[in-house]
Length: 118
Image 1 (tube, rainbow, N blue to C red):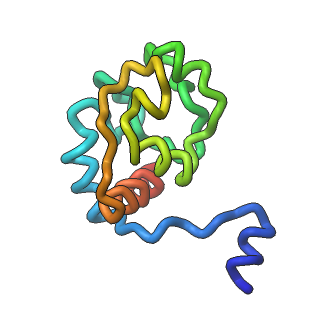
Image 2: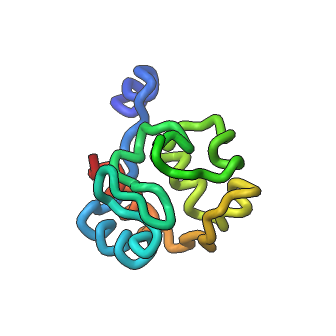
Image 3: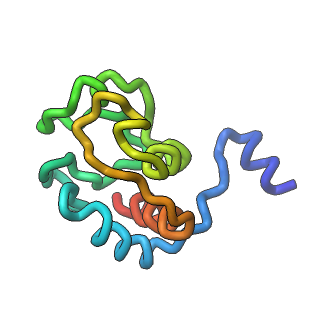
């Protein structure tokens, strides 16, 4: 019944990942192109506070038109969908070169880390 109360309130339960383990996944999978620090862009935009942010919305980063025109918010579910497949499949026309993360545990851990990084 508790799950239904959360759902009815418009909030889904968080993914069952380990944020500490996700920090290691971030280092392996994301750090080459993305910073977890606020205001620090690299090849890709900063991922600080990404959960809840509109796609393509950091003002000082030059996004592809594909991501600037994406009309979504980076929720946990959207990140799971996006990161579980090749970026060019998830958002055709993107500049991001990422093959996707197919390890479900690592993906949940990574998203938990991103959720905690704000």
